[in-house]
Length: 333
Length: 218
Ligand SMILES: Nc1ncnc2c1ncn2[C@@H]1O[C@H](COP(=O)(O)OP(=O)(O)O)[C@@H](O)[C@H]1O
Ligand SMILES: [Mg+2]
Image (cartoon, rainbow over all chains, first blue to last red; front, side):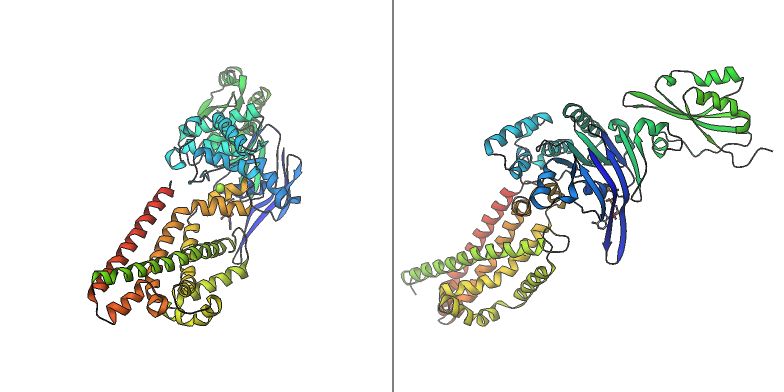
């Protein structure tokens, strides 16, 4: 649904150059929720704004719903934008219009006749649960409600794609949860493809099917969320299961074991202890619910260096677990 | 002077002042909003970046604001004669009043437009709105309270300027004040004129405040 190829954007500001997006490839399949996670300044907003050409990339290709956007201009680009919804961190609502008026705005832009407009506005407000607030002004409603208006407005053109720029970053955790829920629901019911950017791990964890990590304008890893979490060395996994930097003592082996689904119910620690007659020391860990599956990570310490634990580690890997061994700084004497 | 002698003069003077201020307010509103919008949208990174036009409008506005009104009034006499046909009377005063007030109001409009949250413009662009729609439905609409407040300030300045224009041949209350209050020491006449002007300014301010408040939904 969204294909981005070798996309670059450089800002030039009085001789200073900032490469905000650096040859990024990104692909989002139809019906998928894809999250781009990264710190502030990583270039996420720039990347997203290049998808509907609010920002003109310096190089690369942007194809949305089969349409090469860079080939469009003027009225045809505006038409294409009407089919790409966008929601914003600070909502971007018109303070001079009521909730209904804000939702009507894109319909006016599209040239929908007045009578039909009123009907569509009612429908859209129903979809986001704001029917009672139709006559309120943005200043009179809460942040979560404002974002719901933003979502209703974004859906006015019946888009296949929704772009979300930190849509929940200005909201408290409870409101964030309800907005994410709504996005998930729209994704399922309308088959809406969602590309969202965020700096919050939690957003990726809650609603994303696939994710990418962005840093200094580049995508450093990407793929289905569950796959990323099971991938050794994954930054996403490190973010989701925060463990202190490992400091294996000489003569021991410290390994992070990531398990998914039913292996969470399999007692690998006790089977390891039983089958190899070894002491397993648990240093830390966490279990998270990702899209209905439990994924967990446990940091264990085994006596003896990695060489002495080859069989044990192979046993864990054989059981379908991802095992990441942290090397000791100095070899045991 | 008796009241019966003063009344028709005052009625006529007030009418002329209202005429001068009214017409010049209308033209100033149109011109000031146009220039204010141009100043904002033609700048670098604006909706319609046009650096040369932006510089030109900026220059005109700055020069217009730098020239004191009394000098502008005299300097414009040839232009007024050419356009209006005469350089004296109420109608002739409208041109210099408008020329003086447009740059002043354009800056006020510019300031209110800059206060429109940039996120609303980006959101409208993302919804496929055209430049024209963004100027009309987003910038001007969102900035309406500020545009009205700015116009209030401008109208009050115009009332003051119109008295000055009147004093050099434009008619109105300023002309009356000069001829009767200043040259013939009719203190009573002078006092009434001052009171009338104060009332007029207060009324404009009140109307402006109420309108701006009603338009604001922040
Ligand atoms: N309009 C701009 N002009 C100049 N530099 C910009 C502009 N927008 C963003 N940048 C720079 O580009 C980089 C990426 O910004 P942004 O895409 O906003 O990152 P993020 O959304 O991940 O926080 C930052 O270094 C930022 O300073
Ligand atoms: Mg950002």
